[in-house]
Length: 304
Image (tube, rainbow, N blue to C red; front, top):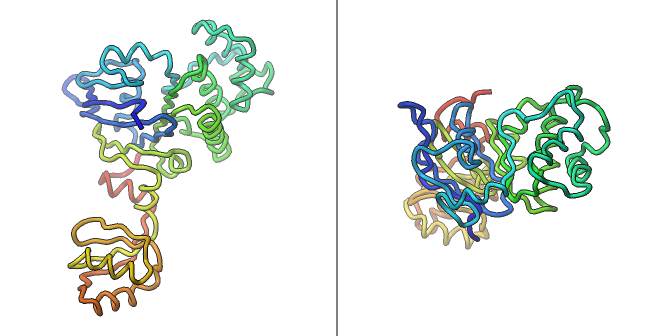
């Protein structure tokens, strides 16, 4: 499947400081892509560049198959919520939405009611936004980003500061839009635990550098409980494991195998390997929490 959005060496300098350094991300249609990194890692700057709100110092990006200057003609197909939602506190949700529709030339009958219903704000009536909870304001921000029927929606820290109820409401809204309208999302956050409940793919950024891209399945596999087996012959060890009926394993490198089943059978696995002439150099049980995985990958503490 072709990438809906990809970046090529995307770089941003502020003076002598390189805030974003040669970032290459790959996002396909239908992804919920989580851009994870601590505060100041460069997430917002990346989102601003691919939204057309900031110009790259170096590099470019491809959008809907077009790159360079040609990509900018598709900016109307992107909805954004970057930093604080641009809302007027003394107006109602409907009035805020009406202003956005006028600004974007959207005249479709009933579109405001439809979008407010989509984000769960269809019954707030004339209540002023200043009296909304933070979660309600974030959902209004998402509704504003949806004006114009975008294919790609970029959300910067949409769950930051929300209580568990607010996070759940935003999460359900994104799931619904992704499933029913096939909208692709890019979501930034510094909270991997919460992002892991939403995202299908991840880009991990640290000090302006994209360290790793991975799928949700790959992330969970990295963090799930497993046997880590060190051996002198992984090829032969895999044959022995298959003969033992063990099929859920992964060869990590030349001397390491991760096993995801029969976690209490380390002794019998070692014994069977030895009987078949395979030397076990080491065997341990690993179980890494999501945040621990992030910290080990980046070598630093998360800002909260």
